[in-house]
Length: 312
Length: 289
Image (tube, rainbow over all chains, first blue to last red):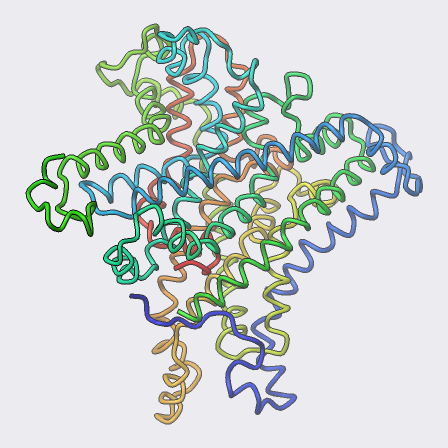
């Protein structure tokens, strides 16, 4: 089994930290500063500017239109149906894709946790969807797999009468979710498999000898053990999937109508088709608020895992 | 089935563990291969289509057996794909280099010689990675415009460094933490200086960490689309932007599309396959080993 590994520790983790003099503590900080300053400059300044712009009425197509507008942008954005639709789509897409890929990832990981012929190859093939360029994958799905005339999936489904269904246009959200699930299941699988493989098999065997059935072992021993891994996968996955843009841009351009417009795509439309900087910024701020809710949970889980790792 | 009947006495206590079932094992293996095939099929199809003639690439029924041809690749390469590919490489290599140059000292400061508020700094780093890209796009666009960095690869290098730096710091720190404290004490007793400390103790541990960091940087920079499509247009456009040209494709273009998609995906696919062991650790910022 894995040796006990030391992970996150509190600030005064190492004894040497205690004897720090003022000069010493500066010496310690110097290697940290370039990265810290860089990240603050490139992330916090734009973020503060987004908040700043969101209070101004500013359209790039109307020169000199830069005017303080208070909360007007937020009022426009919040009362406009396109924002509510995009928010709803973001939630549906994120929840749908995360839930399905976690369940599939768990199933596949359980399958891969046992010895069988060609396990290494199977694992390698399974991570391919995560590595393929998302823009490339979206076009391949749209044009060669789900095309109502030439699509291979359509061809395979023709015996049950689905041969000429235009999936991308008739079921746009389901199609986008399918592709995100295809892409993120390997990610979930890898994290959950790592959890399964760090489990002590002796205990499981002992439970088997004591007469516990495989399902009981899975339900009452394995599942609680890998729960933090599942949570980590789900939360990291949510933070990535909330930002889905590539597949929507390449397959549906947010349509038909607004059927697949999520918040990032709406912001793109408002900023680069409408050139309305103020409103786009207000949408950006809303996206941050939504993400912060998920991120807070994610960070807490990440921290729990480090503690679990440290205990092992 | 009838295996259980060979040992009826024990079957009461442990009916399912009697003897290994070859059928069950074969079934499991077959299922695993079927699942792998389903997930891999779109990738396989992308590669196959790229080696077909255009008429074979769009046919009913789909062409499965064919004589491979490189004509689609030749067309993609002789047209305008190479500059896009080179831009992707420049953006990825330089940003990865910056991530390591900036990230390794920071990880060192946070692991070997922890500063006050180490935890706050770590969580600040990672919180910037989870800020939605959308929240900073508009100001970055305006800043880039004012600094004449629109359609300039430098803008992408700066942004990709920012995206990957928090991951790099966390990841490298998780490797550095594996060095036992005693090792430093022992080295110090031997009279080793900072340089010796770096070369003899840190370097061997950090090398796989650098590989994991480079892999994660490669995946996220090479495949990045949101900033690339909004901040570049022609001169600095990267591989995914080349694929945008296929969105409204008319006529026969599946083979060319597939060849371009394969070429664009190849670096990350290969690196991911080779460095599988670093992948999980990298994707979870060192939390899962």
